[in-house]
Amino acid sequence: MNRNYIASILLISMVYFSCSKSKQPGPQNGNTTAIKITLVSGSGQTDSIGRQLPNPIVVKVTQNGAALSNYIVEFQGSGCNEDLPYKFQTGADGTSSFNWSLAGTVGQQTMKVFALDAQNKKLDSVTAVATGLATGPGWHFAACTPFAFAVTSFCKLSTGRLFASFSEAGLRYSDDNGMSWNLVKPLGSLTFEYVVSSPTDEVFAFQHNTGLYYTSDAGATWTALSTPPFNSGDIRTAVCTPTGKLLVANRTTVYVSADKGKTWTPPGQFTPPNSSGVGDNDMDSPTEDKSGNLYVVGLESETIYKSSDVGKTWTVVPRPNENDCAFYVDNNNWFYKGRSDPAGGIFISKDNGATYTQLINSPNVFLEKMSVQSDGKFYYDNLDLGLYQVAGINNQLKKIYDGAPSIPIPYIIAKNNNIVTLNYGFNLIAYYQK
Image (cartoon, rainbow, N blue to C red; front, side, top):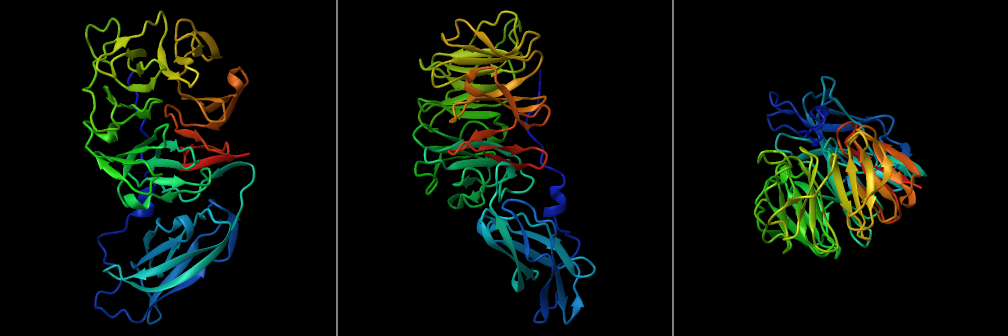
């Protein structure tokens, strides 16, 4: 069963980010001394941090009192919004507007709006203000998420710092349990597809298409490692195991590095039962048990594979009359597997996979992205419905967030137990605050 999990970038982003190239912004004769930008409306509003203000910020650009159309204006917010400027053109009446989503700062925030000439020189500016309020219990949008770029992964350090990668966007971090996100400035405008952390607080960030970056100081400095033998844009999922091995699963295979990304094992061969030698596809759920055995699931055939030699060879884990769509090993060395067959659901083994008992009864459904998070609760994604939580590894099942059909959404539990995930409908980070 061949399924594509990668969320497409929202087409609406074209409305926000593109400017007409058939028209030159503003006057071209160099006479820019009389250009002014004024605030028309939108200043002085109040809302919760991270929320979009009810009314847009509207500005007007004029030259000698006459409205200027097709002129570029740049909106730049304060706080974590500083590195997310947005440029728009003025309309026929000389106005341009912007829907301001507040940064993570409680209290006064500012939005500076600049009039730019053809060389991006700032000719004049005006400032709007707003007041950010603290959020209360419940679900909220996080502040300063790049608009229309899907979140592909989260990871966490022991300090509580979170990192998030976005499809073809910059790497960002949060020091307030996912409530607001800042650009990792040492990496600048580089774009990243996936980020993972190790048990010793090392972070590995896979650059878009090629490149791997490493930090051991929480992101203050980064080192470019050797280029991996795979395209990071094809990563389905990646983990750093308890023993520090990097496991990267893409559509057709799994790559393993036991030396922090310096070298990688050759691609493994995955041959499901009764396949006449045809290779498997859609590799997922990489994990490791306490004996050092590695595991991965081939979703095409719904087969679990095991490697006892750091990924050099892989063998099929016996699966009598079942379709295995997910696999996970927790810190207790308990095994979990998701099954999509008529007797399916999530099953748990406390004896290294010798025997399993059913934890969740859910036939004919893909239950994936299983994990025991730092709050001690078990989480998984139901591809038909959304994100679920099981308290205390018992059957107190609770749906906590709506997902997108056929798209598993990334999630992580922050140090204060905030649930942090992707709101697929808006491609924005959302968090649940108790």
